[in-house]
Length: 420
Figure (cartoon, rainbow, N blue to C red):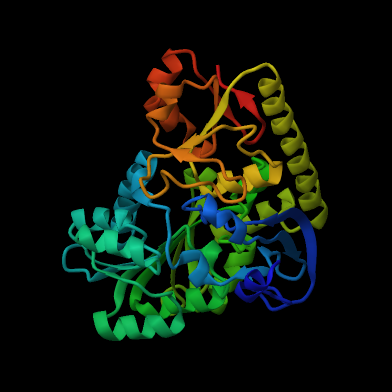
């Protein structure tokens, strides 16, 4: 790392789940730029920073994690990911809000719903449509402005135990406190959950949704590893942290978003003294699968290398045949994939993305240009790699004209394959 990168990155010596130092390296994806740090122009290439992207297992509590922590202000102070850009996520949020309202028995008089890391307010819009009073907490100031413009009250702060106290004093206790696809981003997992616990009213609910380690390993989703994601979460590791934070897990539910996530529903221990038996059954199943086993994780690392070799061989072979290859999307996961595989603009001429915040920029590390999706039909590349493979069906449906003209799609995970 250069001097500036060293200033922005610190390395933990202990586990963020239990403070143990029994940490084993299980996967090394090399030095990479921050996955959402798209460049405004080629002038920024010379000052681009990279950081180690190494995954460790705590043999004491089973938490899989990064030890190199990039300054969150650098990662999230100005952000380019908008949840509202995906049709799949909008449908998911509508279901999510209905689930929470039914589970928590909310109505128009039930109090406040707080969403931590609320992004552009897409989830809170669904709660508002169901008659709930809402508040967003979003540290990315540019994204918080978008939410406020849409009528969602939003505070631009990094959430933690101290902020939870202030928010409760200012807005009153929350009937429900949600956190979606953010717990993995948090360095102080215990403090974050403790803050959620202190924010909710005595009979309240804490609802957390996060990608699950099981699906990451099972489906070889190594591209979801990047500097924003400090923890790779299992029920085994999180149940202990919830307990320390004064929360018991009432239930855990599977969802399909982000390649396979879990929705954790928790209550204060004054209401629910212990985790439910269904939670303990999940912990037993994770042990049988090998989620806390170093050997199983190193086997995963070998599979990651094989995926890289296969994808590179496919792209290079297509290039050698004179075929043009582009990509769809500029998601964080795609940047981990491309940088690890060392696929650049000589291999993939451009990518496209629906977000106007990303168009006209260059992908971090690889410097592949990001264009408007209309360019797929205008330039008609022979093949397009779908980087946000988790919404591949949505993308293929949107790009029917490109496909009808003979264009073909490649899905890179869990194995590189050309869609028929």
